Amino acid sequence: MPVKEVAAKIASMEIRGALRIAIAAAKAMEQEILDGASYDELVRAGDTLKDARPTAVSLPNAINYVLHIFDKHKSDDPSVARSLIIADVSDFIAGLESSLEKIAEIGSNLVEEGDVILTICNSNTVASILKRAWEKGKRFKVYACETRPRFQGHITYNDLASAGVDVTLIVDSAAYYTMVHKSVTKAFVGADTVYVNGDVVNKIGTSQVALMAKHAGVELIVCTETIKFSPYSVSGELVEIEERDQKEVWDKEAKIFNPAFDITEKEHINMIVTEVGIIPPEAAYQVLKEKFGWSLE
Ligand code: RUB
Image (cartoon, rainbow, N blue to C red; front, side):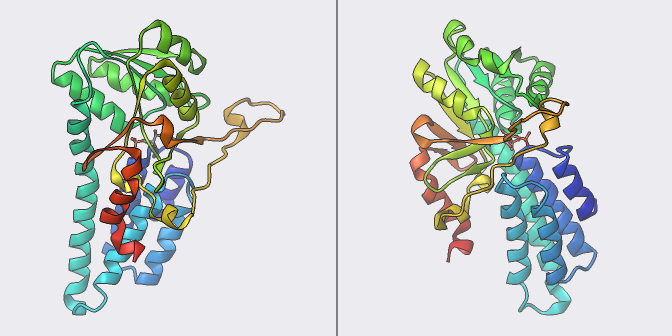
């Protein structure tokens, strides 16, 4: 798919969820390379993609890694350089895709028989973990927050229900009541960006869920591939919290504030599940050093 089309689909949220966004962007960059783009053309394509949505760091991370691959091969013999670049980029994309599989396996070990799990928005990573746990024969209940204003909770509901998982939809404002009165044991949430200090940016409402979880003694588990860790946060650069069209909230002339994401402080996070293992939020820097050393030098 051409870069402009992918960027438009990311902006309109037809392609959404931080991992899917990263994979779609990397594939669009791969296509540019296959079409013979120069480094400068590739940088411009990357900029178009990066401008599509501001908050998921997986988007610039994926683009910058493809650019890094291109740059790395610049001193190679030109007759083989392009095929080496294409091989590395396709390995990178395969790695992104397999990270979901690995995290599903690791995360599913955290789900226990009889758990009552609350989730918010639609994280493909969280859904993959829950479906894997169900496939393994574990039996548990899930409460999915509907996630105003875009109702990504409906996607979660449909995905889990069609895999046979015992899932119930709740309105967002029922989250605390549900935690207390339905004996929720764990909250699983996704991530758009993980900062070096262990704070996590995710769908608006996640930080409320985290505060409630802390108050109710419920474990908050963030599920994220390491492509969503922000190397830029090492030098203090934070992501922009996207504010979307007010019409998503109410199709009327009114004063409306519609932030799409919020920040959950590390103090409210019990653990972060990644494809390289389960870590405390405080270990974010270690992950960044290992994964993004090339960009931190
Ligand atoms: C999606 C969202 C998801 C993360 C992780 O927001 O906040 O929790 O992106 O998703 P939006 P995944 O619907 O606005 O894109 O686990 O699928 O990468």
